Length: 61
Image 1 (cartoon, rainbow, N blue to C red):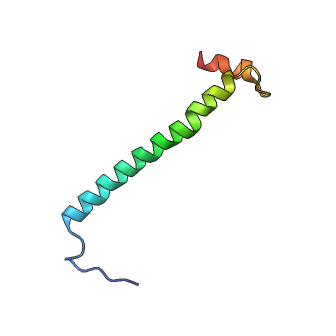
Image 2 (spheres, rainbow, N blue to C red):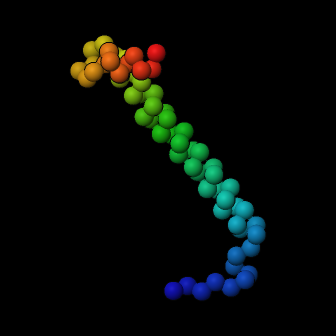
């Protein structure tokens, strides 16, 4: 198991890890919105879609 000394973990490193986590989390959420949200909205409003388009599309109107 790796050991950790006082010099390897600084407040600056802690802040940078936090900022990195927030940025990557937001980027992932945006990518999921673009890849799933917009295409899902298009699919449920498509009249030729074989699913329950009419019933589900009413939820978003």
